[in-house]
Length: 189
Image 1: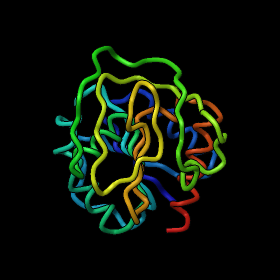
Image 2 (image 1 turned 60 degrees about the vertical axis):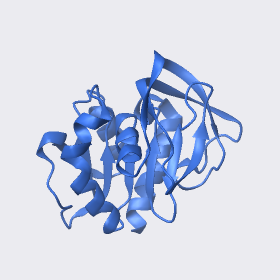
Image 3 (image 1 turned 135 degrees about the horizontal axis):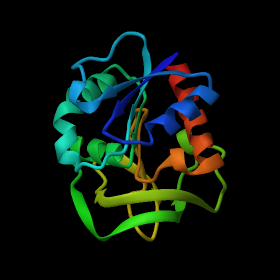
Image 4 (image 1 turned 180 degrees about the horizontal axis):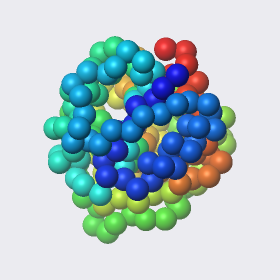
């Protein structure tokens, strides 16, 4: 099993790869400017990394690959900037926080299923580092929220397409659970 990671110039991609390796998932990294239009047949999942760039800059390079993955029912996980790209691509709007959000914050997950299965029932503390947020597209359901960002986690209705505003790769054991669950979803598809 191999997961393709779109790197939006994010230095934390090495941590994503580390978590995937723990789950015995091979990974391949491609820079967002070099995205193909179609997903290769050996790809079981797609992760879109965070980014120091605004989602409107990276999305035009990535959109064909993401739409192809969704059409082929390949599971997708957008992290931070990748979450914003997914939201923007499917009709959400990207806005700016008054102040950058950085640090560990409590996230409330309304539904603990799919990639959030096995997370604590109350609040989970996750690492955040962003200046922007994305509104929930109509084709998605809200799965997590915080006092800082309303749309912390979302899932496309009837598809294995997930977005998280926080950084599971920087959130220790709880992040490891999310990557484990995502890898398990990729194995089933």
